[in-house]
Image (cartoon, rainbow, N blue to C red; front, side):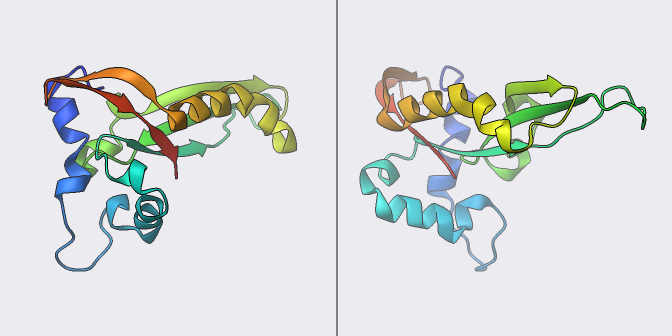
Length: 145
């Protein structure tokens, strides 16, 4: 995402924007995002660090009420982006597609283990990421909100 000049610029939108009316109109206004930045200032001081959300919901791909087969997409969304881009399909990352004869239920943690490993490595940081907007390399970190 940082290879594109426009996208890299949009990924720091949340840091430059301040809520004027005191209303929460974007996750950047939320107390949980402020808590993350306050609790880990080395993370919060770098506006390019990604704040991510994880979402999953099941559906029946065969559109038949008698079919027990289900699919569970697991999607990551980047909260750094402005509201008009945050929920665009282009910026939603399909990280997993859990399919099977029944919903994953309590066993979903088994499916999420590779994603959790990737998120742990992103928390530690990925060195040498090029920011096309600023024209420099930095260490990219990410946190799951």
